[in-house]
Length: 225
Ligand SMILES: [Zn+2]
Image (cartoon, rainbow, N blue to C red; front, side, top):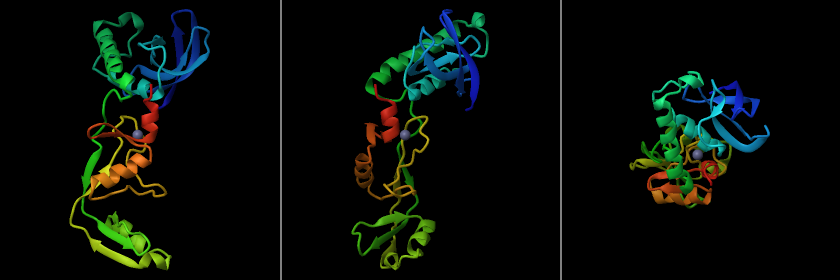
């Protein structure tokens, strides 16, 4: 994705040059939404770049605008001029708006990028004297943890846990940081018990949107109505 110069045409009343973010659909860009007076409305628009026209909504959240642009990627060529827009384009736009009506009122993404639960290889359990619950780590993180400068870190128990570990991921399409991490930890949190991960994620503001699909705090906020 990159930013490209776009001339928004608001119903032939006003035209405004803006920066448009390219999307997975060639010819469709996401831009700040501009109103009749040419002022930024605070929302985001899905624009047919060759004509500068809105493809549907006057404005929505950035997350929904990006997802709507992705839904227009149905095989029709959006790089053509407005006069060559045909039935296929109109059907694609109508279907995308249908998905928006169906899902946005529930605060859900218009499509899912992935299942949230992923099973990973078994890990090493590390239990320090001062922390009752073990952390589950892959080998290279274990070396970092027990090989650190703090002698306290070396007091405890380490064992190889034979059970595969779970990881939790945000299921929203354009999440930039989908793997759940415990607070103050840059590493993905892994655990053999999904309820432990779910509880931690919930405390961190994650939400289970539908069974098996979670939204991180940022994506949950980005899909609020
Ligand atoms: Zn997310």
